[in-house]
Structure formats: C-alpha cells, structure tokens
Length: 320
Image (tube, rainbow, N blue to C red; front, side):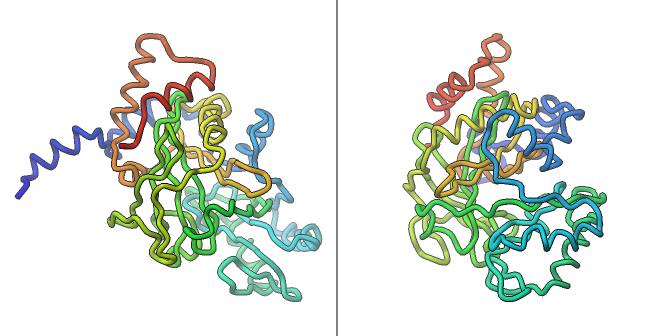
C-alpha cells in the first residue's frame, strides 16, 4: 500500500500544481489586475481579438438595457440559430444555444422549447447579473452559433466541443478538448459533466480523458474512442494560443477555441484563472512546463515571435 508521503512525492515529480501555487506564483505574479477586464468582459475580448485579426464568432447584437430585449426579437427575426451569453459569464452558466424555431418559440440545443416570455425572462436575469462574475449587472452578447467540425460527431453529445490551451508568456504549455455529454446537457464545462481529453502539444493527437475523477478512453454516451483523434488545424490553434498573449497582455491565461466546420478556429473566450483539471486530462503536471518557460525568462530568452514560441512548445511539451 502506498503511503501519503509516497503519493505526494509522485505527484510532485509529475509537476502537478495546486490552486494555491497557481494563484500565488502565476495568476498574481503574471496577470496585472488592470488587464482583467480584457478577459472578464467577452465583448472587450471580442473587440481586441478582431483588432488583432484573430477569428471570433460574428456578433449579431448587444443587449444592455431591459427595453432592448423587446427590440432584440426584431433584430434576430431572420436568424434560425444563435447563441446568447452574459458578457461577464463564467463556467457556461446562463448561456442559451438556440438551434431553431417553431412559430414564436425558440428551440434550445437540448431539443426543448422556450416561449417568448421564458426567453425574455432568462435575458432579464442575465442583465441583472444572475449568471455573472460577482453577480454584477451585466450586458448580453448574441452571436453566431458554431457548427462543429465533423471529426467530433462521434465523441460529442449534442453540444459543441471546445479546446482549451494554457498559454504562459505566450508559450502554449498544455491543451485539452472538452467534450459535451448527456450528463452535461450538451455543455462543454467539466464541472457540469463534460469530458476533458488531453492533447499532445507536438502532434495535436488526443491521448486520454477524464470524466469527473474517472480515467476513460471512450465517450460514455457514444462509446466511441476519444484517444488518437487528430485535432484539425492544430498549428493554427497553437498560434492563436500564442498570440493571445499580445492580445490581452496577461502572462498566464486559458484560451478557449472552437473549430467551426466552415470557418475553422474561433476564439470563444479567455480566462485569467483557468482551472487545473487540464492536468488530470493530460496525466501530466503543468508546473514542470511552466518552470521551463520561466528558465527562458530568467535567461532573457523569451521570444517575441509567436511562431518561435509555438516551435519551442512543440519541441518541449509532449503528453507522454
């Protein structure tokens, strides 16, 4: 039987990082507070991404006041599919994915329908801050509904998978894809029941997955293998992860990207405090990789060229 000290030793050897260490040594040390609005407000993130010529889902409308909810119906009357999200939302809470209509009802991604009153009430809750960081009054984004790449058809339940890249000083350090399940109600958030699958940085191949605390190799709903999938346009995704550094000027950031079958990679959002489940998905710790980048920093060898940063990450950060 392995004792606690031996377990701790093995975890440290793998470079696993805890929340306290993440906050003290990376979030607080490398993320200046004045830049937080650039990632905490999805509208600001989208504006900055467009300015940096990075791809994002098209913005259809912004709702800032209660009376604008009524006006929104007219603005989107010709849209069959769209996404409604709080600008300061977190963890996917409150997001509405509308996939069609029946009369004046909106069909959600899970197949259920919302009548107009229910839709308006939900948006009113968004404006009041019910789904927002800190509960502050919010504004609402209405944007393009991503049509995911066909490669994910057998490993996703209804929703759209997204890819998270942890970027440190502009170097992609670790990546995973989050796959929606029946339990997560088609959402890609791990705490709601989605699967995290580690991606090998050099090749873009998926390695292994975690569902809650369970290590898995097949999707629990489709029973298709989640191992050995080649993520399309992997180099493009890594470049977006690298360029996010110049976009937001935060040293330690999670970059969430979706792959649209027509438009390719699109930035969904950035996160200044990305969770650490990505380590479980990869079966590798983040700390050793971050330390390697810090060695470059201490030697004053950090590159200003995103392509060089991607090349470094591909050479040094395999998921074994």
